[in-house]
Image 1 (cartoon, each protein chain N blue to C red):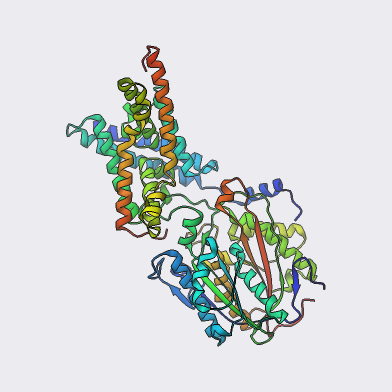
Image 2: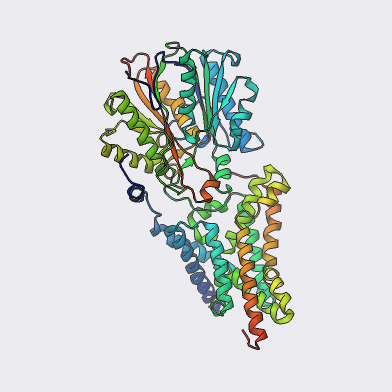
Length: 342
Length: 121
Length: 151
């Protein structure tokens, strides 16, 4: 198979050496209770602002992932990281003290897959031997930047999603150094189906997920049955329903293999998150708290992780622009697994 | 008894005005800020053409507490000011009538910011 | 993906749950009505103390604004507003919350560029267009007065 149009099959698949997830108290009381490396208490965890609290979470996630990989920051060649805040301040201040060569990225909620993807290409190419991917989001910090002040009494529509307060980090190294390999990836296109509703991000992102997943299936000549889990980032209830309906129509039914991080992080019956979780921290935390563990232990073998991002800007939105979506895919396989993607 | 009737009138009229706002919120893409602006301007308009005054006389706070009432207050203020001060009244009347409410909101806003810390939803 | 923007828009509409109006309408009515009757009770109480009609109106607003500010500060207001919807933001309480909540939120950016400048991000338009409308209304009154009429 040829690597083209964003689909990449790694000749030397990099592997995951360490990972960590941290979450706020609400996330830690959801279905993934007890699986996080650390739970941050309150909205600020003793910091002076929500933004500082987000940086603190991200720093902890990065340090913890390094610790679990048995590495120190100066053994890492490059960091790809980002978050939702303007100028990615969660990352810039969070990773400041680690002194790891740093390339900041912005992919909205798709950042976790994007940073692992870029890191994998770097490691696989041989130019670097170890990289780290880090991302975070914070409900309060995002809400005040993108929407309304926290204490403002507005009603959230049922299609709205809840930005997760969470962070995740993944350390990547050479093939088979770790127990989970990044076998392939697919860089998403900017897909815009003219959704303008800031309170329906799932609908804005679903076409991007469709595009990336079908492109990957076509290029690799695989289908849903070939994987144990097809994990989208944070489409939420509305976006997930749209995704599975369109995938059926496109001739690539997901056949019960689909899960969504936004639905796994929160319990929608019990927690007031409406359509589900969102934010870069959401997919990062679900991946690092749960899915990677299951891949390591062999409970899952082949997982497609498709983090979706709504490239929403309040400025563009106020100027009447629609919300473009992007979805980046990485194909993760446990070492005990088998088969190549080409 | 009279008090109960006044309260009931205020409850019904105020409640209905709020339901109009809720209809706009649920059936249109209007944001709360736009709906508020609409209500105030509507209040000024209804006050000017003399429709709102009888509603205020009937329902009391049921008509003055919703933001249409704020608009009505501005229109009353400006019409009084024009009568007593002429042209200058056009500039002064509205804000003078709303001054107490706006000043109170500013004062309490600053005080709350001094005393409290923001919290999650 | 084989779908026009229009078709996709229709699919999204079909898949997106609407607001549960069987809940939101009665709640807006109940909570909005309750706030207005609290206002009415205050008005009756104040006027029983020989206050003028105008003074009563002002004090009712100020007291409701004060209550809203305190509830916003304690983080209670938005919990009521979650159920009340338009029932809490259409009355003067909504205006007060729109001023107080950004003031509270942006204290981390300081008292000049944070609290005081962000105070009007939501309520500003209400004051601006209220004032403009009042000036338009005043102009009409002025013209009618000049023509010898009375409004």
